Image (cartoon, rainbow, N blue to C red; front, side, top):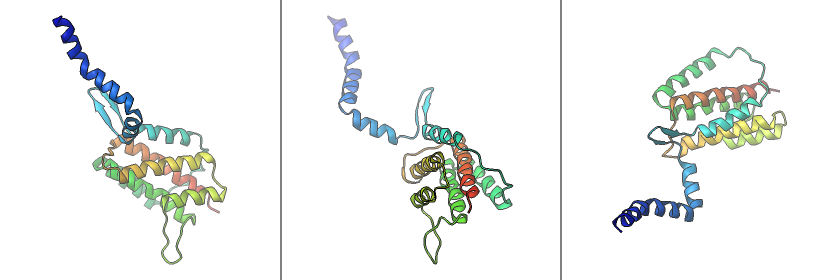
Length: 182
């Protein structure tokens, strides 16, 4: 009888956790979607899933003809790489400026006196122009969503390698916008 009681004691918490997870599965799923990094012993999951989706979109995009980037663009990329060493999250947020700069140079701005952009407007203008493939739009939308998470979620954590991957994708997104100049 003692062994039976010990088995019940050992199984009580795991069964309760599984049962509660089943009952609140929608809430647990929503909570887990907000977690950007999870680490338990040797297992680690990160916001890399979003990056993988963006990278798969980027693979489907025909690479624009490479032009020699200006010295200021190269220095900006180098600066972003240095930022990623100190604060990968800040590097993700700042990397979006490459896309905004390309959009401004391409005339995708709003406002008469003070030219400005916003991420959603950039995407809608790109779609309206008809110059961009659905893959390009999807890539930029994925990058926008990742940037929004980095900007607005307090529990969002990014590794340096993920920030560098994001930077590569942002450079490609900016190149796609720049290549479509009229």
